[in-house]
Length: 489
Image (cartoon, rainbow, N blue to C red; front, side, top):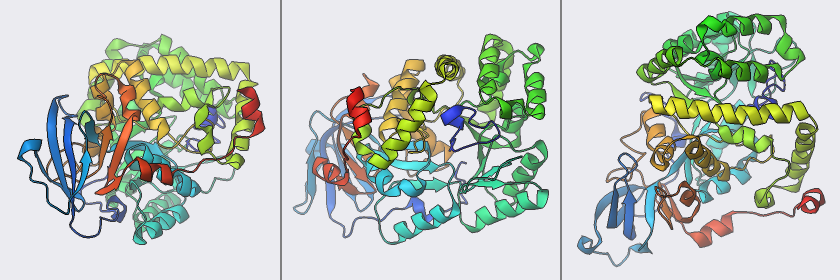
């Protein structure tokens, strides 16, 4: 969620900095981090496997990992332990697939983001808006053998800025030729998908979709302000981010709210008052139509259009103070957060609207989940917004999904098997099975009884590399907390 001047600070600190799916024919080397050297076995011994498809628990299993693959799973008593094997004794512990955060912005924060993501069991991310220089930087890090999560990239975002200069991670598209050239440039940089953004015009939206199809690149992102959600789904957008525009989309068509909203967008009213977007969404929630919404949900299901709610974003930017995790953020960033927190908290209207949005978003996710709309977990993590933490915020998102009405199993699916299906890579990831990539999280307690247990991490396996607690602690850097935050505590 990087800065969008079209709704301009609209969706405040949220869409203010609002800063797909990977098709089978799209092959990005970043999906294959370096494998362990040699062929020595790693064995997770006597663990309970959580089947994220069914919720079945299979206790007293041993998982044999050779290189970066799970080569055998069997009852512990039936596994012969080679002399050269490294053993992880996991009696009483649970293993789940590595988690995916399907909406992050790492940009120039890679040095901090990577260890925090891995320490939190996040073994894959979908980067949803970054400069092309950063794409190159990450590719170079990968080529040097840096251990990092699997990454799928959008690169620069397809957008239009009527009156302002675009930030470095956005294209400022004005013509059809520019739109086609932008998508072609993304293809040259070997990105995995194109991200659509809020302010793009109907005409350029259609051009980007057309060129992306020619370049065999999926399209995901924000629902453009003037495009109906069912149309965008039918046009092939693979996911919608932040529930942006979804309340207006699920309001009764008889209310005429969508047409009113489009007319107001045309007048530039949302540019003049960045909180008008919230006003419309909250008003639309009161006009929710079960009948009209069910038709939309069926469209989403039929087209496999995923929702990535990032509910943690609004709850985070609206917190008046950071929590103890602030120690993982450099003081220079802490000072930026302090400015952002003060700005938001000084605007009582904004605070009230954000709180209302949290409530209606939670309610809408419950309804979508009950209707079977596919959902993926994303944190929108970036240091450009306060109180969002790489890795940690994904666990918070899972908790918010459960609070909204998902079961713990469904929340786990939103960060494991659902991303695997979305990325058309279910044969390699998303479950703990023989033949799949060795991306795993070993937990001290059962996440199906309490989703908070995803934070009780005993060890992480990233592409066959074991990250035990000693390694995890050595990876994570802590910083002094600025006095303004310590005084508040």
